[in-house]
Image (cartoon, rainbow, N blue to C red; front, side, top):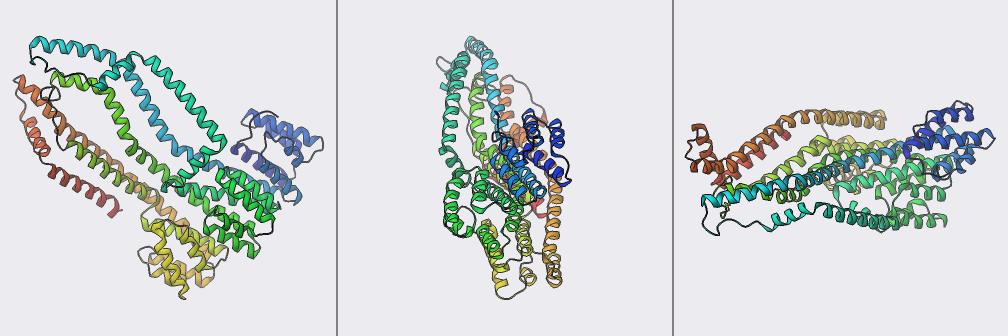
Length: 586
Protein backbone atom coordinates (compact mmCIF):
# COMPACT_ATOMS: atom_id res chain seq x y z
CA UNK A 1 0.00 0.00 0.00
CA UNK A 2 1.42 3.37 -0.95
CA UNK A 3 1.67 6.11 1.63
CA UNK A 4 3.47 6.95 4.83
CA UNK A 5 3.92 4.85 7.93
CA UNK A 6 1.27 5.47 10.55
CA UNK A 7 2.18 8.03 13.18
CA UNK A 8 2.57 7.16 16.84
CA UNK A 9 -0.80 8.72 17.69
CA UNK A 10 -2.49 6.57 15.07
CA UNK A 11 -0.69 3.43 16.24
CA UNK A 12 -1.79 4.20 19.81
CA UNK A 13 -5.39 4.44 18.58
CA UNK A 14 -5.16 1.15 16.66
CA UNK A 15 -3.41 -0.83 19.40
CA UNK A 16 -5.68 0.51 22.14
CA UNK A 17 -8.85 -0.33 20.21
CA UNK A 18 -7.53 -3.76 19.24
CA UNK A 19 -6.60 -4.45 22.87
CA UNK A 20 -10.18 -3.75 23.91
CA UNK A 21 -11.59 -5.92 21.09
CA UNK A 22 -9.35 -8.91 21.79
CA UNK A 23 -9.86 -8.66 25.56
CA UNK A 24 -13.62 -8.96 25.08
CA UNK A 25 -13.21 -11.61 22.35
CA UNK A 26 -15.29 -9.50 19.97
CA UNK A 27 -15.33 -10.31 16.23
CA UNK A 28 -12.25 -8.67 14.73
CA UNK A 29 -13.70 -8.11 11.27
CA UNK A 30 -16.68 -6.01 12.35
CA UNK A 31 -14.58 -4.35 15.04
CA UNK A 32 -11.94 -3.27 12.54
CA UNK A 33 -14.61 -1.84 10.24
CA UNK A 34 -16.07 0.13 13.13
CA UNK A 35 -12.57 1.40 13.93
CA UNK A 36 -12.12 2.41 10.29
CA UNK A 37 -15.34 4.41 10.43
CA UNK A 38 -14.03 6.31 13.48
CA UNK A 39 -10.46 6.70 12.17
CA UNK A 40 -9.17 10.30 12.30
CA UNK A 41 -7.31 10.12 8.96
CA UNK A 42 -7.94 8.68 5.53
CA UNK A 43 -4.70 6.68 5.49
CA UNK A 44 -5.58 4.98 8.78
CA UNK A 45 -9.11 4.32 7.55
CA UNK A 46 -7.75 2.66 4.43
CA UNK A 47 -5.25 0.54 6.38
CA UNK A 48 -7.93 -0.65 8.82
CA UNK A 49 -10.28 -1.53 5.97
CA UNK A 50 -7.56 -3.68 4.42
CA UNK A 51 -6.98 -5.35 7.78
CA UNK A 52 -10.70 -6.08 8.07
CA UNK A 53 -10.76 -7.61 4.57
CA UNK A 54 -7.81 -9.90 5.36
CA UNK A 55 -9.18 -10.96 8.75
CA UNK A 56 -12.61 -11.75 7.30
CA UNK A 57 -10.90 -13.99 4.72
CA UNK A 58 -9.42 -16.04 7.57
CA UNK A 59 -5.94 -14.48 7.73
CA UNK A 60 -4.51 -14.06 11.23
CA UNK A 61 -4.11 -10.55 12.58
CA UNK A 62 -0.31 -10.77 12.61
CA UNK A 63 -0.17 -11.89 8.97
CA UNK A 64 -2.62 -9.16 7.98
CA UNK A 65 -0.45 -6.55 9.69
CA UNK A 66 2.73 -7.91 8.08
CA UNK A 67 1.04 -7.65 4.67
CA UNK A 68 1.01 -3.84 5.02
CA UNK A 69 4.64 -2.90 5.79
CA UNK A 70 4.17 0.57 4.31
CA UNK A 71 1.53 1.42 6.91
CA UNK A 72 2.42 -0.60 10.02
CA UNK A 73 6.04 -0.51 11.29
CA UNK A 74 7.97 -3.69 11.94
CA UNK A 75 7.82 -3.08 15.69
CA UNK A 76 4.02 -3.22 15.70
CA UNK A 77 3.98 -6.34 13.52
CA UNK A 78 6.46 -8.09 15.83
CA UNK A 79 4.44 -7.16 18.91
CA UNK A 80 1.21 -8.53 17.39
CA UNK A 81 2.95 -11.72 16.28
CA UNK A 82 4.50 -12.25 19.72
CA UNK A 83 1.18 -11.55 21.43
CA UNK A 84 -0.58 -14.16 19.32
CA UNK A 85 2.18 -16.71 19.92
CA UNK A 86 2.11 -16.21 23.70
CA UNK A 87 -1.69 -15.98 23.87
CA UNK A 88 -1.42 -12.56 25.53
CA UNK A 89 -2.45 -10.27 22.69
CA UNK A 90 -4.65 -7.88 24.73
CA UNK A 91 -1.89 -7.27 27.26
CA UNK A 92 0.75 -6.78 24.56
CA UNK A 93 -1.42 -4.37 22.58
CA UNK A 94 -2.27 -2.39 25.70
CA UNK A 95 1.42 -1.96 26.51
CA UNK A 96 2.17 -1.04 22.92
CA UNK A 97 -0.53 1.64 23.02
CA UNK A 98 1.05 3.10 26.13
CA UNK A 99 4.46 2.99 24.45
CA UNK A 100 3.18 4.88 21.40
CA UNK A 101 1.59 7.54 23.57
CA UNK A 102 4.84 7.93 25.48
CA UNK A 103 6.81 8.40 22.25
CA UNK A 104 4.23 10.87 20.98
CA UNK A 105 4.45 12.90 24.18
CA UNK A 106 8.24 13.02 23.99
CA UNK A 107 8.13 14.26 20.42
CA UNK A 108 5.47 16.84 21.26
CA UNK A 109 7.58 18.18 24.12
CA UNK A 110 10.57 18.59 21.82
CA UNK A 111 8.49 20.50 19.26
CA UNK A 112 6.93 22.68 21.95
CA UNK A 113 10.37 23.62 23.22
CA UNK A 114 11.47 24.62 19.70
CA UNK A 115 8.28 26.53 18.84
CA UNK A 116 9.13 29.76 20.65
CA UNK A 117 12.48 30.46 18.91
CA UNK A 118 10.95 29.68 15.51
CA UNK A 119 8.05 32.07 16.12
CA UNK A 120 10.42 34.85 17.20
CA UNK A 121 12.64 34.39 14.14
CA UNK A 122 9.69 34.37 11.74
CA UNK A 123 8.15 37.43 13.37
CA UNK A 124 11.46 39.31 13.26
CA UNK A 125 11.97 38.45 9.58
CA UNK A 126 8.44 39.62 8.73
CA UNK A 127 8.93 42.86 10.66
CA UNK A 128 12.24 43.66 8.96
CA UNK A 129 10.77 42.85 5.54
CA UNK A 130 7.80 45.14 6.20
CA UNK A 131 10.10 47.99 7.22
CA UNK A 132 12.28 47.52 4.14
CA UNK A 133 9.32 47.37 1.78
CA UNK A 134 7.03 50.11 3.13
CA UNK A 135 8.85 52.26 5.67
CA UNK A 136 12.29 53.03 4.29
CA UNK A 137 11.17 54.49 0.92
CA UNK A 138 9.00 57.12 2.63
CA UNK A 139 11.66 57.80 5.25
CA UNK A 140 14.25 58.51 2.55
CA UNK A 141 11.99 61.15 0.99
CA UNK A 142 11.48 62.81 4.36
CA UNK A 143 15.24 62.71 4.95
CA UNK A 144 15.95 64.56 1.69
CA UNK A 145 13.37 67.21 2.61
CA UNK A 146 14.87 67.61 6.09
CA UNK A 147 18.40 68.01 4.73
CA UNK A 148 17.19 70.71 2.36
CA UNK A 149 15.33 72.45 5.17
CA UNK A 150 18.39 72.56 7.43
CA UNK A 151 20.58 73.80 4.55
CA UNK A 152 18.06 76.54 3.84
CA UNK A 153 18.18 77.70 7.48
CA UNK A 154 22.02 77.68 7.46
CA UNK A 155 22.01 75.69 10.69
CA UNK A 156 25.31 74.00 9.86
CA UNK A 157 28.45 75.30 8.39
CA UNK A 158 29.56 73.95 5.03
CA UNK A 159 30.42 70.29 5.12
CA UNK A 160 29.09 69.72 8.66
CA UNK A 161 25.96 67.84 7.61
CA UNK A 162 26.59 64.21 8.57
CA UNK A 163 27.14 61.70 5.86
CA UNK A 164 24.80 58.78 5.50
CA UNK A 165 26.38 55.69 7.04
CA UNK A 166 27.33 52.64 5.00
CA UNK A 167 24.64 50.63 6.77
CA UNK A 168 21.97 53.14 5.79
CA UNK A 169 23.19 53.18 2.18
CA UNK A 170 23.13 49.38 2.06
CA UNK A 171 19.61 49.30 3.47
CA UNK A 172 18.43 51.78 0.87
CA UNK A 173 19.88 49.52 -1.84
CA UNK A 174 18.17 46.45 -0.35
CA UNK A 175 14.89 48.36 -0.19
CA UNK A 176 15.19 49.32 -3.87
CA UNK A 177 16.02 45.73 -4.93
CA UNK A 178 13.91 43.86 -2.38
CA UNK A 179 12.40 41.46 -4.91
CA UNK A 180 15.83 40.40 -6.20
CA UNK A 181 17.19 40.01 -2.68
CA UNK A 182 14.15 37.97 -1.63
CA UNK A 183 14.54 35.73 -4.69
CA UNK A 184 18.23 35.17 -4.01
CA UNK A 185 17.52 34.47 -0.33
CA UNK A 186 14.79 32.01 -1.28
CA UNK A 187 17.00 30.17 -3.76
CA UNK A 188 19.86 30.09 -1.27
CA UNK A 189 17.52 28.83 1.45
CA UNK A 190 16.27 26.04 -0.79
CA UNK A 191 19.81 25.00 -1.67
CA UNK A 192 20.82 24.98 1.99
CA UNK A 193 17.68 23.02 2.91
CA UNK A 194 18.38 20.47 0.16
CA UNK A 195 21.96 20.05 1.37
CA UNK A 196 20.80 19.64 4.97
CA UNK A 197 18.22 17.03 3.96
CA UNK A 198 20.85 15.11 2.00
CA UNK A 199 23.27 15.20 4.93
CA UNK A 200 20.48 14.17 7.30
CA UNK A 201 19.56 11.15 5.21
CA UNK A 202 23.21 10.27 4.89
CA UNK A 203 23.48 10.25 8.69
CA UNK A 204 26.27 12.83 8.91
CA UNK A 205 24.04 15.65 10.10
CA UNK A 206 22.16 13.35 12.47
CA UNK A 207 25.39 12.35 14.19
CA UNK A 208 26.47 15.99 14.46
CA UNK A 209 23.07 16.99 15.84
CA UNK A 210 23.07 14.18 18.41
CA UNK A 211 26.62 15.09 19.44
CA UNK A 212 25.59 18.72 19.92
CA UNK A 213 22.45 17.89 21.91
CA UNK A 214 24.46 15.65 24.23
CA UNK A 215 26.98 18.45 24.91
CA UNK A 216 24.45 21.10 25.97
CA UNK A 217 23.59 20.60 29.67
CA UNK A 218 19.89 21.47 29.44
CA UNK A 219 19.23 19.33 26.38
CA UNK A 220 21.50 16.43 27.37
CA UNK A 221 19.25 15.40 30.24
CA UNK A 222 16.11 15.44 28.09
CA UNK A 223 17.72 13.60 25.16
CA UNK A 224 19.36 10.97 27.36
CA UNK A 225 16.30 10.26 29.50
CA UNK A 226 13.88 10.18 26.56
CA UNK A 227 16.17 7.88 24.55
CA UNK A 228 16.58 5.50 27.48
CA UNK A 229 12.84 5.58 28.23
CA UNK A 230 12.00 4.67 24.64
CA UNK A 231 14.60 1.90 24.53
CA UNK A 232 13.53 0.37 27.86
CA UNK A 233 9.83 0.54 27.01
CA UNK A 234 10.28 -1.06 23.60
CA UNK A 235 12.69 -3.76 24.72
CA UNK A 236 10.66 -4.60 27.82
CA UNK A 237 7.45 -4.76 25.81
CA UNK A 238 8.93 -7.13 23.24
CA UNK A 239 10.62 -9.36 25.82
CA UNK A 240 7.41 -9.49 27.83
CA UNK A 241 5.60 -10.64 24.69
CA UNK A 242 8.13 -13.42 24.10
CA UNK A 243 10.22 -11.95 21.28
CA UNK A 244 13.80 -13.35 21.29
CA UNK A 245 16.37 -10.96 22.73
CA UNK A 246 18.46 -10.39 19.54
CA UNK A 247 15.41 -9.48 17.46
CA UNK A 248 13.88 -7.44 20.29
CA UNK A 249 17.14 -5.54 20.63
CA UNK A 250 17.19 -4.78 16.90
CA UNK A 251 13.59 -3.53 16.93
CA UNK A 252 14.15 -1.45 20.07
CA UNK A 253 17.16 0.17 18.45
CA UNK A 254 15.20 1.03 15.31
CA UNK A 255 12.45 2.53 17.45
CA UNK A 256 15.06 4.79 19.05
CA UNK A 257 15.67 6.57 15.72
CA UNK A 258 19.22 7.55 16.50
CA UNK A 259 22.22 7.00 14.25
CA UNK A 260 24.69 6.75 17.13
CA UNK A 261 22.45 4.33 19.00
CA UNK A 262 21.90 2.22 15.88
CA UNK A 263 25.63 1.91 15.20
CA UNK A 264 26.40 0.85 18.76
CA UNK A 265 23.39 -1.44 19.09
CA UNK A 266 24.46 -3.38 16.01
CA UNK A 267 27.63 -4.36 17.84
CA UNK A 268 25.60 -5.12 20.98
CA UNK A 269 23.36 -7.43 18.96
CA UNK A 270 26.35 -9.34 17.63
CA UNK A 271 27.76 -9.74 21.13
CA UNK A 272 24.41 -10.97 22.46
CA UNK A 273 24.10 -13.49 19.63
CA UNK A 274 27.56 -14.78 20.50
CA UNK A 275 26.35 -15.64 24.00
CA UNK A 276 27.27 -12.54 25.98
CA UNK A 277 24.73 -11.13 28.43
CA UNK A 278 22.94 -7.91 27.55
CA UNK A 279 24.43 -5.93 30.43
CA UNK A 280 27.98 -6.96 29.55
CA UNK A 281 27.44 -6.09 25.89
CA UNK A 282 25.98 -2.68 26.79
CA UNK A 283 28.90 -1.99 29.13
CA UNK A 284 31.38 -2.57 26.32
CA UNK A 285 29.64 -0.08 23.99
CA UNK A 286 28.82 2.69 26.51
CA UNK A 287 25.45 3.41 24.91
CA UNK A 288 23.53 4.08 28.10
CA UNK A 289 24.16 5.25 31.64
CA UNK A 290 25.86 3.03 34.19
CA UNK A 291 22.71 3.09 36.32
CA UNK A 292 20.63 1.58 33.51
CA UNK A 293 23.24 -1.06 32.71
CA UNK A 294 23.50 -2.02 36.39
CA UNK A 295 19.72 -2.30 36.68
CA UNK A 296 19.61 -4.49 33.56
CA UNK A 297 22.30 -6.68 35.11
CA UNK A 298 20.20 -7.07 38.28
CA UNK A 299 17.16 -7.94 36.18
CA UNK A 300 19.10 -10.59 34.28
CA UNK A 301 20.39 -12.16 37.48
CA UNK A 302 16.92 -12.29 39.04
CA UNK A 303 15.12 -13.43 35.90
CA UNK A 304 12.74 -10.45 35.70
CA UNK A 305 14.41 -8.41 32.96
CA UNK A 306 11.18 -7.39 31.13
CA UNK A 307 9.55 -6.07 34.31
CA UNK A 308 12.76 -4.28 35.29
CA UNK A 309 12.98 -2.61 31.88
CA UNK A 310 9.37 -1.44 32.07
CA UNK A 311 9.98 0.03 35.53
CA UNK A 312 13.08 1.80 34.25
CA UNK A 313 11.02 3.14 31.35
CA UNK A 314 8.59 4.67 33.86
CA UNK A 315 11.48 6.24 35.77
CA UNK A 316 13.15 7.71 32.69
CA UNK A 317 9.81 8.93 31.37
CA UNK A 318 9.35 10.91 34.58
CA UNK A 319 12.88 12.27 34.20
CA UNK A 320 12.19 13.26 30.60
CA UNK A 321 8.96 15.00 31.58
CA UNK A 322 10.81 17.05 34.17
CA UNK A 323 13.67 17.81 31.77
CA UNK A 324 11.26 18.75 28.99
CA UNK A 325 9.35 21.11 31.26
CA UNK A 326 12.60 22.71 32.36
CA UNK A 327 13.76 23.00 28.76
CA UNK A 328 10.48 24.58 27.66
CA UNK A 329 10.78 27.12 30.45
CA UNK A 330 14.47 27.91 29.97
CA UNK A 331 14.74 27.90 26.19
CA UNK A 332 12.77 31.12 25.59
CA UNK A 333 14.91 32.92 28.16
CA UNK A 334 18.18 31.57 26.76
CA UNK A 335 17.08 32.30 23.22
CA UNK A 336 16.04 35.80 24.24
CA UNK A 337 19.46 36.62 25.68
CA UNK A 338 21.47 34.81 22.97
CA UNK A 339 19.58 36.00 19.90
CA UNK A 340 18.28 39.37 21.07
CA UNK A 341 21.58 41.18 20.32
CA UNK A 342 21.47 39.92 16.72
CA UNK A 343 17.80 40.79 16.31
CA UNK A 344 18.43 44.15 17.95
CA UNK A 345 21.34 44.80 15.59
CA UNK A 346 19.18 43.94 12.58
CA UNK A 347 16.31 46.14 13.75
CA UNK A 348 18.78 48.88 14.65
CA UNK A 349 20.32 48.69 11.20
CA UNK A 350 16.88 48.91 9.62
CA UNK A 351 15.97 51.85 11.83
CA UNK A 352 19.31 53.63 11.34
CA UNK A 353 17.84 55.99 8.70
CA UNK A 354 15.30 57.11 11.28
CA UNK A 355 18.06 57.69 13.82
CA UNK A 356 19.94 59.68 11.20
CA UNK A 357 16.83 61.80 10.65
CA UNK A 358 16.40 62.45 14.34
CA UNK A 359 20.05 63.42 14.70
CA UNK A 360 19.72 65.73 11.71
CA UNK A 361 16.68 67.45 13.20
CA UNK A 362 18.18 67.69 16.68
CA UNK A 363 15.83 65.27 18.38
CA UNK A 364 18.57 63.10 19.84
CA UNK A 365 20.55 65.98 21.23
CA UNK A 366 23.51 67.98 20.08
CA UNK A 367 24.66 68.64 16.55
CA UNK A 368 24.72 65.63 14.23
CA UNK A 369 28.51 65.42 14.17
CA UNK A 370 28.59 64.78 17.91
CA UNK A 371 27.82 61.44 19.47
CA UNK A 372 27.14 61.53 23.18
CA UNK A 373 28.58 58.58 24.96
CA UNK A 374 28.34 57.42 28.52
CA UNK A 375 27.97 54.38 30.70
CA UNK A 376 24.52 53.66 29.32
CA UNK A 377 25.57 50.81 27.04
CA UNK A 378 27.57 49.11 29.79
CA UNK A 379 24.75 49.50 32.28
CA UNK A 380 22.25 48.13 29.77
CA UNK A 381 24.32 44.97 29.28
CA UNK A 382 24.82 44.58 33.02
CA UNK A 383 21.07 44.90 33.53
CA UNK A 384 20.42 42.32 30.81
CA UNK A 385 22.86 39.81 32.31
CA UNK A 386 21.54 40.37 35.82
CA UNK A 387 17.96 39.90 34.71
CA UNK A 388 19.03 36.79 32.80
CA UNK A 389 20.58 35.32 35.94
CA UNK A 390 17.52 36.14 38.01
CA UNK A 391 15.29 34.79 35.25
CA UNK A 392 17.15 31.48 35.16
CA UNK A 393 16.86 31.14 38.92
CA UNK A 394 13.16 31.98 38.76
CA UNK A 395 12.57 29.44 35.99
CA UNK A 396 14.42 26.72 37.88
CA UNK A 397 12.46 27.43 41.02
CA UNK A 398 9.19 27.69 39.11
CA UNK A 399 9.63 24.48 37.14
CA UNK A 400 11.29 22.11 39.58
CA UNK A 401 11.35 23.74 42.98
CA UNK A 402 14.41 24.76 44.94
CA UNK A 403 17.69 22.87 44.61
CA UNK A 404 16.92 20.83 47.71
CA UNK A 405 13.50 19.93 46.37
CA UNK A 406 14.98 18.86 43.05
CA UNK A 407 17.57 16.69 44.81
CA UNK A 408 14.92 15.16 47.05
CA UNK A 409 12.65 14.47 44.08
CA UNK A 410 15.49 12.78 42.17
CA UNK A 411 16.38 10.63 45.20
CA UNK A 412 12.74 9.72 45.81
CA UNK A 413 12.15 8.62 42.22
CA UNK A 414 15.21 6.38 42.19
CA UNK A 415 14.58 4.95 45.65
CA UNK A 416 11.03 4.14 44.60
CA UNK A 417 12.39 1.98 41.77
CA UNK A 418 15.14 0.44 43.94
CA UNK A 419 12.74 -0.59 46.70
CA UNK A 420 10.03 -1.74 44.31
CA UNK A 421 12.43 -4.05 42.48
CA UNK A 422 14.15 -5.00 45.77
CA UNK A 423 17.57 -3.96 44.45
CA UNK A 424 20.66 -3.51 46.67
CA UNK A 425 20.24 -0.13 48.35
CA UNK A 426 23.87 1.02 48.58
CA UNK A 427 24.72 -0.07 45.04
CA UNK A 428 21.53 1.53 43.75
CA UNK A 429 22.42 4.85 45.38
CA UNK A 430 25.90 4.65 43.88
CA UNK A 431 24.52 4.03 40.41
CA UNK A 432 22.01 6.86 40.84
CA UNK A 433 24.87 9.17 41.83
CA UNK A 434 26.83 8.34 38.66
CA UNK A 435 23.91 9.36 36.46
CA UNK A 436 22.79 12.35 38.52
CA UNK A 437 23.52 16.02 37.76
CA UNK A 438 26.69 17.33 39.37
CA UNK A 439 24.85 19.29 42.05
CA UNK A 440 23.20 16.05 43.27
CA UNK A 441 26.20 13.73 43.34
CA UNK A 442 27.80 14.85 46.60
CA UNK A 443 24.65 14.24 48.64
CA UNK A 444 23.96 10.87 47.00
CA UNK A 445 27.53 9.75 47.59
CA UNK A 446 27.41 10.74 51.26
CA UNK A 447 24.01 9.08 51.66
CA UNK A 448 25.39 5.87 50.16
CA UNK A 449 28.38 6.02 52.51
CA UNK A 450 26.07 6.27 55.53
CA UNK A 451 24.05 3.27 54.34
CA UNK A 452 27.19 1.23 53.72
CA UNK A 453 28.38 2.09 57.23
CA UNK A 454 25.39 0.22 58.63
CA UNK A 455 22.93 3.05 59.14
CA UNK A 456 19.30 2.60 58.23
CA UNK A 457 18.04 4.67 55.34
CA UNK A 458 15.98 6.91 57.62
CA UNK A 459 18.95 7.49 59.94
CA UNK A 460 21.17 8.31 56.98
CA UNK A 461 18.62 10.79 55.63
CA UNK A 462 18.28 12.40 59.07
CA UNK A 463 21.90 13.56 58.74
CA UNK A 464 20.81 15.87 55.89
CA UNK A 465 17.94 17.91 57.40
CA UNK A 466 18.29 20.60 54.78
CA UNK A 467 17.27 18.16 52.05
CA UNK A 468 15.14 15.64 53.93
CA UNK A 469 12.79 17.28 56.48
CA UNK A 470 11.75 15.55 59.68
CA UNK A 471 8.35 14.49 58.32
CA UNK A 472 10.03 12.87 55.31
CA UNK A 473 12.47 10.98 57.54
CA UNK A 474 9.68 9.77 59.84
CA UNK A 475 7.72 8.40 56.89
CA UNK A 476 10.80 6.54 55.62
CA UNK A 477 11.40 5.14 59.11
CA UNK A 478 7.78 3.96 59.26
CA UNK A 479 8.15 2.31 55.87
CA UNK A 480 11.30 0.50 56.98
CA UNK A 481 9.58 -0.70 60.15
CA UNK A 482 6.46 -1.93 58.33
CA UNK A 483 8.23 -3.36 55.30
CA UNK A 484 6.34 -1.22 52.78
CA UNK A 485 9.09 1.22 51.84
CA UNK A 486 8.21 1.11 48.13
CA UNK A 487 4.66 2.32 48.83
CA UNK A 488 6.00 5.06 51.11
CA UNK A 489 8.30 6.37 48.39
CA UNK A 490 5.42 6.38 45.90
CA UNK A 491 3.40 8.54 48.32
CA UNK A 492 6.37 10.81 48.96
CA UNK A 493 6.88 11.22 45.23
CA UNK A 494 3.25 12.23 44.79
CA UNK A 495 3.51 14.65 47.73
CA UNK A 496 6.66 16.32 46.38
CA UNK A 497 5.11 16.74 42.94
CA UNK A 498 2.02 18.35 44.47
CA UNK A 499 4.16 20.67 46.62
CA UNK A 500 6.21 21.79 43.63
CA UNK A 501 3.04 22.44 41.60
CA UNK A 502 1.68 24.57 44.43
CA UNK A 503 4.92 26.53 44.70
CA UNK A 504 4.91 26.94 40.94
CA UNK A 505 1.51 28.62 41.08
CA UNK A 506 2.59 30.81 44.00
CA UNK A 507 5.81 31.82 42.25
CA UNK A 508 3.93 32.59 39.05
CA UNK A 509 1.51 34.78 41.00
CA UNK A 510 4.47 36.65 42.50
CA UNK A 511 6.46 36.96 39.29
CA UNK A 512 3.72 38.58 37.20
CA UNK A 513 3.34 41.82 39.21
CA UNK A 514 7.07 41.84 39.89
CA UNK A 515 7.82 41.60 36.16
CA UNK A 516 5.35 44.39 35.39
CA UNK A 517 6.97 46.65 38.00
CA UNK A 518 10.50 45.92 36.76
CA UNK A 519 9.58 46.53 33.12
CA UNK A 520 7.71 49.72 34.00
CA UNK A 521 10.62 51.01 36.08
CA UNK A 522 13.08 50.14 33.30
CA UNK A 523 11.01 51.98 30.68
CA UNK A 524 10.60 55.06 32.86
CA UNK A 525 14.30 55.08 33.74
CA UNK A 526 15.28 54.71 30.07
CA UNK A 527 13.00 57.58 29.07
CA UNK A 528 14.31 59.78 31.87
CA UNK A 529 17.99 59.02 31.27
CA UNK A 530 18.22 58.72 27.48
CA UNK A 531 15.20 60.40 25.84
CA UNK A 532 14.13 63.40 27.91
CA UNK A 533 17.57 65.10 27.95
CA UNK A 534 17.55 65.13 24.13
CA UNK A 535 14.17 66.81 24.04
CA UNK A 536 15.39 69.28 26.63
CA UNK A 537 18.02 70.49 24.16
CA UNK A 538 15.41 70.92 21.47
CA UNK A 539 13.05 72.89 23.72
CA UNK A 540 15.95 75.01 24.98
CA UNK A 541 16.73 76.04 21.40
CA UNK A 542 13.06 76.94 20.94
CA UNK A 543 13.11 79.08 24.15
CA UNK A 544 10.31 77.03 25.71
CA UNK A 545 10.09 76.88 29.50
CA UNK A 546 9.69 73.35 30.84
CA UNK A 547 7.35 72.53 33.75
CA UNK A 548 8.87 72.32 37.22
CA UNK A 549 8.09 68.60 37.51
CA UNK A 550 9.87 67.90 34.24
CA UNK A 551 12.88 69.90 35.39
CA UNK A 552 13.13 67.90 38.61
CA UNK A 553 12.88 64.62 36.70
CA UNK A 554 15.54 65.77 34.25
CA UNK A 555 17.83 66.86 37.07
CA UNK A 556 17.52 63.46 38.74
CA UNK A 557 18.07 61.66 35.44
CA UNK A 558 21.13 63.80 34.70
CA UNK A 559 22.58 62.97 38.12
CA UNK A 560 22.08 59.26 37.51
CA UNK A 561 23.47 59.51 33.99
CA UNK A 562 26.68 61.12 35.30
CA UNK A 563 27.09 58.69 38.22
CA UNK A 564 27.63 55.12 36.96
CA UNK A 565 28.52 53.94 40.46
CA UNK A 566 25.08 54.95 41.70
CA UNK A 567 23.52 53.10 38.77
CA UNK A 568 25.43 49.94 39.64
CA UNK A 569 24.42 50.24 43.30
CA UNK A 570 20.77 50.65 42.35
CA UNK A 571 21.04 47.70 39.98
CA UNK A 572 22.57 45.54 42.71
CA UNK A 573 19.81 46.58 45.10
CA UNK A 574 17.18 45.64 42.50
CA UNK A 575 18.73 42.20 41.90
CA UNK A 576 19.05 41.59 45.64
CA UNK A 577 15.42 42.56 46.27
CA UNK A 578 14.20 40.30 43.48
CA UNK A 579 16.28 37.39 44.78
CA UNK A 580 15.14 37.99 48.36
CA UNK A 581 11.49 38.35 47.41
CA UNK A 582 11.35 35.32 45.15
CA UNK A 583 13.64 32.80 46.83
CA UNK A 584 13.74 33.70 50.53
CA UNK A 585 10.02 34.10 51.08
CA UNK A 586 8.64 31.26 49.03
